Length: 369
Image (cartoon, rainbow, N blue to C red; front, side, top):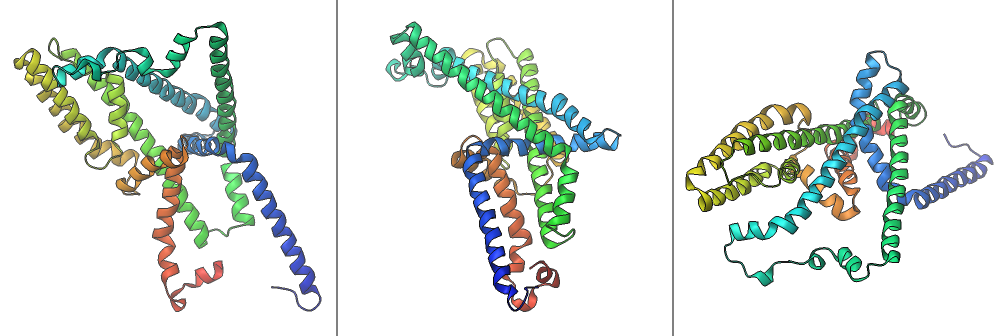
């Protein structure tokens, strides 16, 4: 309750002073840490990846620090490393496709292309290679190596800071929750329930959907390799690793995501069979039965419901993943889903309350205010 009489002015000045200091600190933190926002968002993503396993280890008797170290060191770090390696290899395959197989694929799909329409020189494909080719001096190579080394060291340092941030969140999460509920938010209050629902949504998005996409990448890649092993001579699924990654990423597109990938592969295999050996058309049919019917049925029926759940419509998740990187840059793939979860939970839980008339506002909302 606000004090009366002569204390009112002093109380108001103190309140304004503290709020001014809080605003100043907030501005300073935003300015200082603004350039590292992407890495902190990535750290939140790592936290949600590590948290389920860390909590499981704690229930089995591990301390919070030990469970966080084991989870991040033995599970999350290898996961991120494997994902980075797979992504790098996919880019290498894409570059190889452009340099070696691009003309062959175009000739297969579109016979007799005009040769002038295709990029045939390194300079047309890679401007950096053109610079090195036109000025192959020690200085040019040295500057290029120095730039690569500086970027590598900077990225390594920021990745280390990110893992430390994620480790602190995983290790001290119970302490942080208790501190917030003790000093700021009453337990079971509307705001507490709102934040808990956001937390549940982020775990579903970051842990569930990420694990689902990664599982689809690995399993689809393995099946593609097995199918290539039984493929007729002269017919094969091209760029298996790249297509496996595309298949996993396409899973966030509702209903038709993986189907589009399968249709493109089936069309390519059919054209290969028609141009080489029409009797080999059985292979695209086998591909459709294995991937489009059996594999996709398993993913839709068992894998996706168990790993990702259905807390959010897939169309909303799709737009979060598509618009996030375009709007914010590389870290938008993590920040986009965060904004999406907060927005959807607010619309579902709090917006109807705000639209009620004053007489319809619940007592809990009044207590919160």
